[in-house]
Image 1 (cartoon, rainbow, N blue to C red):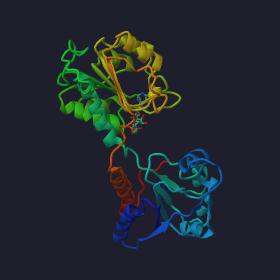
Image 2 (cartoon, helix red, strand yellow):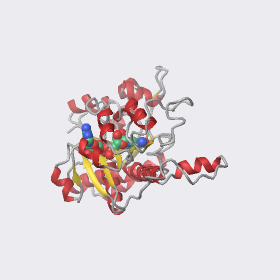
Image 3 (cartoon, helix red, strand yellow):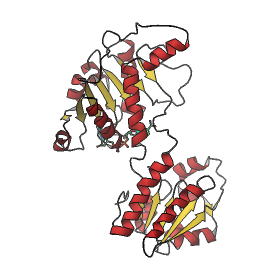
Image 4 (cartoon, rainbow, N blue to C red):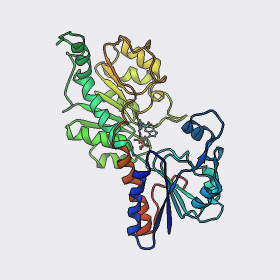
Length: 342
Ligand SMILES: NC(=O)c1ccc[n+]([C@@H]2O[C@H](COP(=O)([O-])OP(=O)(O)OC[C@H]3O[C@@H](n4cnc5c(N)ncnc54)[C@H](O)[C@@H]3O)[C@@H](O)[C@H]2O)c1
């Protein structure tokens, strides 16, 4: 079996860690330098890849031949030309990302090539950040820091009459996927009551973990803290809207590190301005970067940050571990996991 690992100037050294796969009998790993001839679209490289796909770039014939000789191709950001599938050798393309724009999925499907990604690679940083935001908003950490930094010593912050602890609080998790599951575990460790709404996770699986499975409406009415962790799709846009804010406790606060479009912005702003809920902590916005003049300025019950939840310096290591385990499993057990185009 031949594995071709595509390295780019900035990650070649790190990508060479895939050489460890040669510990599997009969496996050869070849490193190749990405060789894309820049095309003339005027778009940034990643924007071109996301909007126009891998076949919008030009490649040298030698490079395509190298990739076509592989049984398994591993890439991080480099695009993979569909012409590499023509010889029928390629069994799978493994991508060190959640998105799979590096490959033309239709052409991969037609050629019977499995496309593998790194699901949940940001689950660790995003879940930890979410817990940080919950505590920051609940305990006034960011709010007090902002005052102190202006030379104001203020012990009478707006939520002092209803600021509580996680122990004994009801924390609602909307979306029990990679991020939501980790947040739920930490909340459980804090001795909070974990409430879950996720229509795609069987109720028994939720209750088996000791959590309470509820409808979204029930969760909104019961929770002291609501953490939003589902994906933005046509179906889920504005899923949390005015109807839900009307059900929430006056002291409840909502935390969004997922996508802004999941919560109806006008309803959220109305709930904050009119103090219909306790507060919010937000890392994601409809317009990013958030302009200086924006509707959150001046709110005394909102902590906001600059889409930072997924940031951490060891993200390559986390992603490498997910993909390395997947490819190693293929060589040891003959099965592929994390297949996107099943
Ligand atoms: N702020 C950041 O930097 C950052 C970084 C990475 C991911 N994210 C976001 O975090 C969110 C969670 O990511 P993840 O990796 O846990 O996703 P995931 O796909 O693992 O989990 C999503 C969960 O939501 C559930 N779900 C789907 N539709 C739902 C609905 N209508 N109502 C309730 N639940 C629903 C699914 O069953 C699944 O369990 C995503 O929105 C993602 O875009 C943000």
